Length: 92
Image 1 (tube, helix red, strand yellow):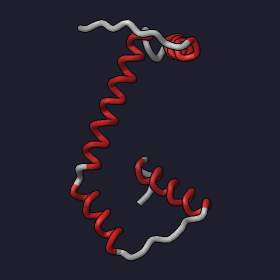
Image 2 (cartoon, helix red, strand yellow):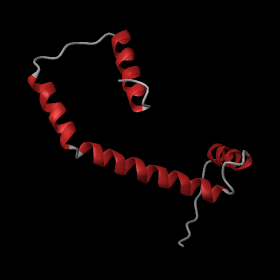
Image 3 (cartoon, helix red, strand yellow):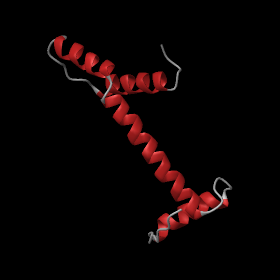
């Protein structure tokens, strides 16, 4: 296992310490390791999505569907909620 010496701003260290105090992590080191692993997983997931033939097909369909239109704030909020619901498995 490798070691690294980090200097964190006080507010960040306080937050990390609170995560340990909550019992979620046994040490600040474990918390930082979990953050790095979560970021690695996120990057791998994003890469998988961006390299997806399905995404390429959907983007092509979008381009072929004609000119775009402006969205108002309510429409955009509704669309964002639909995406979140689908991602959480709550939508169709």
